[in-house]
Length: 266
Image (cartoon, rainbow, N blue to C red):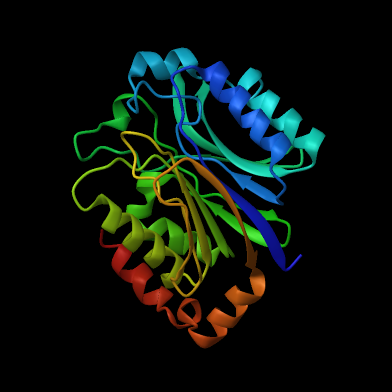
């Protein structure tokens, strides 16, 4: 497959995990796309905020109702998706993004860079992941990241070196000074500096900026969902990645041996 129809689900999330699950399952039944993408904190928030007690009480293993219901619905309707959960593993909870291909769990990414900035401290709730994830999907190579990861170009370049030509970034991007400008700059830059597609799906509501988007391999904002609850679809093409990488071959021209030398000094 050289093209893929993607659906960006910019939705508001409540504090009721079961209501959120019903909303997700309904969307999966109604939207026609090859890949459906949901935002971060999909299990729920308390008016846009998280507490340790709330996250731990709502966290689940991969086998429990929230994830298993979504995977089963994915198989039933024949759609692939990326969604997020509070993943419980033993006494730890991860902020995780899951890639499911028509009922088969293909990849689990545990958020590496936790939001310990701007008055927030995710590390008081979540355990940080330590693995970069790239997965084949319908002819694309998908690299997974979450929200605050956008501020760290290193992991996107590493995913690109592992073949990623599509980055998927579920987000809960809080409002604040310059936050919209940073959102556009970071998403566009991560896409263009790696000559890859980037899809960032944000929550919407009082606390979040919205503006879920697709950034092209040239860094162009291909689609922007604005500031209201909305679901939109678009086509993305591998050929556009190939053409951009021929025109601007930054991945080939990068001085990887030199970078390794200096990174050893860190």
